[in-house]
Amino acid sequence: MSDDRCAPLRAHLAAKPTDRFARYALALELAKLGRPDEALAELDTLLQHHPQSGAGHYQRGLILQAAGRREAAREAWEAGLAALSGVRDPEARRSHREIELALDALEDADE
Image 1 (cartoon, rainbow, N blue to C red):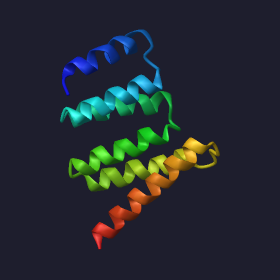
Image 2 (image 1 turned 45 degrees about the horizontal axis):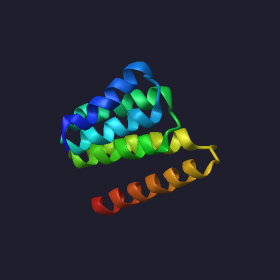
Image 3 (image 1 turned 30 degrees about the vertical axis):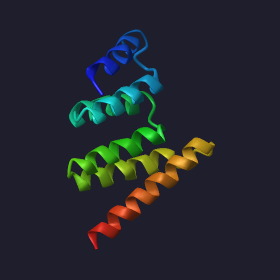
Image 4 (image 1 turned 90 degrees about the horizontal axis):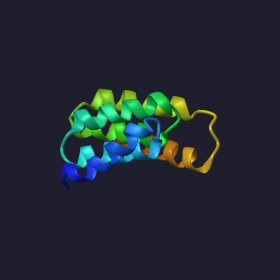
């Protein structure tokens, strides 16, 4: 994985900065490149424009957890659950469940 994969996404986002799919894809690419701070910044931008992006909240928590920031991961996932509260589409329900499972796993690891 190289920065070459980020360049087209960055170019697309320069023209369409609120494109949630491109922003999410860029965040994942940056995470794969071992650049968690940049990935988190992209997810923060994504969530500013699309606060009910369950996948964005879920990935944000995963990146924070992988960086050893367990409490921040917990907060990210709890914020995701709050943002998805009342949203009934299938994607939101799936993300809600993924976040619940991630929180459960985090709790189990704390015991």
